[in-house]
Image (cartoon, rainbow, N blue to C red; front, top):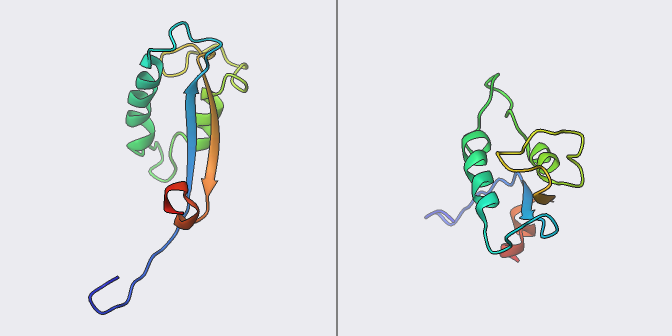
Length: 105
């Protein structure tokens, strides 16, 4: 709230992809190397807002989920961010407003 007692908030919601190592394909469950590699890759392509047309992101949350989920990425043989496509599973969540975010309840 501002000094005059009024406040304004604009909610746009948030989409998130949750990525985890799949223990069925993880040779070392105590190592998070695959997740760190993905984090570095996403920092350079998604978080930076990379765009070839200056309007739309090159990669979306839905595409991150598709590429990172070994249940949906079997149509490709390409490695995902440098790791085998079977290494991770992913899901996505959408929160329409800030009040629906888990930490804001």
